[in-house]
Image (cartoon, rainbow, N blue to C red; front, side, top):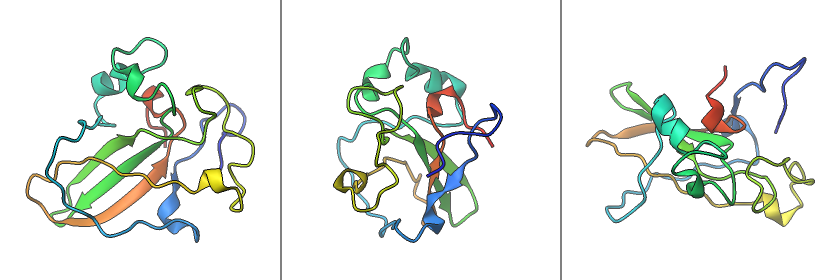
Length: 141
């Protein structure tokens, strides 16, 4: 994964659904007591997880947040939510991405993530995992 931009520009978004080693499995439906999601397009919600001062920063304090999930529904509507995970060293949500993050033989890079997104009764047609380092700072294109 490209983790940094060029000439101080932010890193571009990376659609990981196009990578050979990335799989997005069938959408599961679950009704339960899952933690609420953080809307990528709502600046107030992003500020709530901002490091080091956001009131909900504990949600990402151990792993960081460098990805978001974009869910597209059959009617063309889209929801984008923070994926509360990253490839940064444990307990260093603003630290560097750990050495070996690009090595497919490194067991630490094989992770299983889930995401909470309310569908409002709509059928999901597509799910994309997008890379946006320190997503609480905003999504850059």
